[in-house]
Amino acid sequence: MDFIHEIIQYKFLTNALFASLLSGIACGIIGTYVVCRRLVFLSGGITHSSFGGIGIAYYMGWNPILGALVFAVLSALGIETASDRGRMREDSAIGIVWSVGMAIGIIFIYLTPGYAPNLMSFLFGNILTVTDGDILALAGLDVVILLLFLLALRPVMYVAFDREFARSQGIPTRTISYFMAVLVALTIVLSIRTVGIVLLISLLTIPPVIVNTLSKSYRKITWWAAVVATLGNLTGLYFSYEFNIPAGAATIFALTLTLIVVKLLPLCCKSLKP
Image (cartoon, rainbow, N blue to C red; front, top):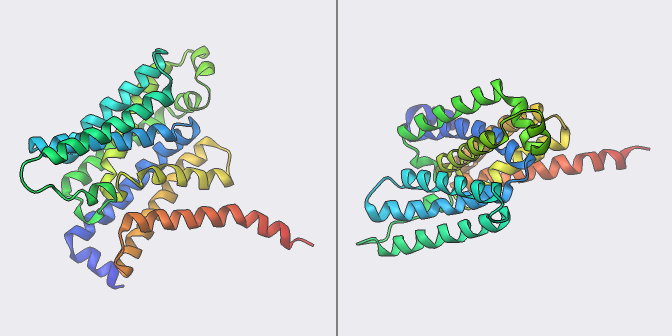
């Protein structure tokens, strides 16, 4: 009861609650696309490359999240363009963007005049630093994602599973791929404060994997992954409050335990049968 009372009483906890809900919805839905299209490595590349934007923003005196947003979107479009036109293998492009983005971020952080800023909240997340602007941005992103998947779930699903088949059906695969790459980048950057750059890839991948263990329907995985990610965020926030540990790490730990239970449960049931 103290947890609920303090969430209502303190603004930073209220923002943390809304961030948990909104980022869970975005990561669950977008994570399903990422997992089904086997773009987990891509999401990791975009996540870590955004650190370059954070470093440049600190050096220029800009909003770090805005810098990460621009850098992540450009990285996502660059990777998609390079792989789509056959100029470079996708995994090679991701690896290059991943390392170059981190390198740029480190260089500009060290070049920033004065005391080097504390980057722990960006690397490992600090949900208590979420602002009203972050909440509005996440809410806007959720509206776009929900509208897209309500109106165009089937084309997105075709592109996720088989681009060649989707192209043969007259679906604009290139447009959808580029648009989804931007949504992946936006979801990643706007969720950085929730779990951080290092752990964010897990928030995108573990919920869809949990649901995929129980269902093979893309539609069901999409919506239930959003539910699982949201519950994971809320559980992490509660554990953070009770045990004074980082919410991002607690979230990933809770989701990982859930995945282990879901994977082991069928085996246990089989072993108990006479």
